[in-house]
Image (cartoon, rainbow, N blue to C red):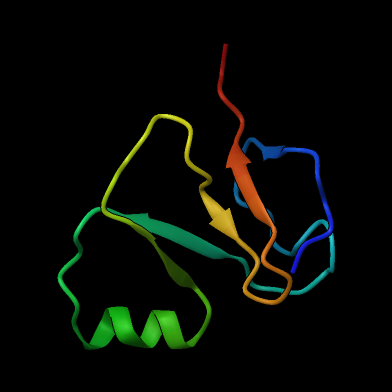
Length: 77
């Protein structure tokens, strides 16, 4: 599990985790996706994780499947 207590933000998806250095990072999929073979494959590869059905404006966009670090998309001002 991640030891980072500060919020980590990036403008785009990093190639590797800024905390542990593992790659790839998973995109977090929110809502109620149709579970199919392709989604299952991407989840097994660590490319997608499920974020739940409740969607808020300030949810993390990516997650390290190794250390659990959640990374937020930096908002353009």
